Image 1 (tube, one colour):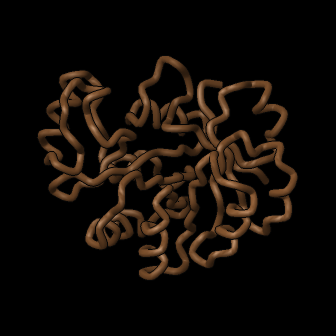
Image 2: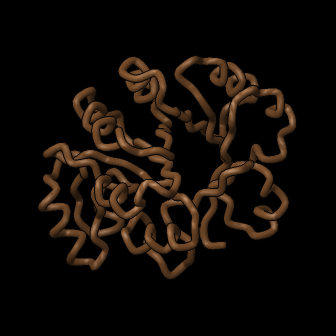
Length: 214
C-alpha cells in the first residue's frame, strides 16, 4: 500500500509551510506530513525549512545561531510561529506518519536529543540529504527507518549503489525519476517529491508520493 504525505503541511495554497495550523489540517484530512528540522543555538529542535530567517522574516540570522525564545519572538511578529518538534509530535497524537528531514548536519548531541524526542513515535522516518546524519543515527540505533534524499543530478548507477548501503533503509527521489523503470529493480522503498500536479498524482498514486496543494 502506497503512502502519500503532504509536503511541509502545504495541503492548500492558503496555508503557510511548517506551521501548527497547516499540520493540524493535514491530520484532520487523515494525511501524514513531511517536515524539515533544524536545531537552535540552545538545542531546541524546530520545524522550519530555511537555514536563514531572511527570506521568511527579513532578519539575517541563522537558526543555528539564535536561541529558540528569540526565534519565537521574531516568527510571532509575522504571525507565523515556528513550532518545536515536540509540539508537532503532540498534535499528531501518534496517529499520523511523520517524515522528518534533517536539513543541516546535526551534532551527536543534537541527534541524541532528536532520538529522545521521537522515541515514543510509532509511524515515522528520518531523512536527510546529508548522509552523515543517517550514518551517525544508524550507529546509535540500527532499527530506525532512515531515508536518503537524492539530488536530481545523480545518475541511476549512483542511486543503485547508495540503495545497497545498510544505513539507507529507503530512498527519497525527485519526481523526475517517477517514470524511470530502471529503479524498479531496487529492492527498497522509494518516495518521490514534490508532486504538485493533480494529473501526475493520479498517474502515479500507486507509488509513495510527497505532494502539496492538491
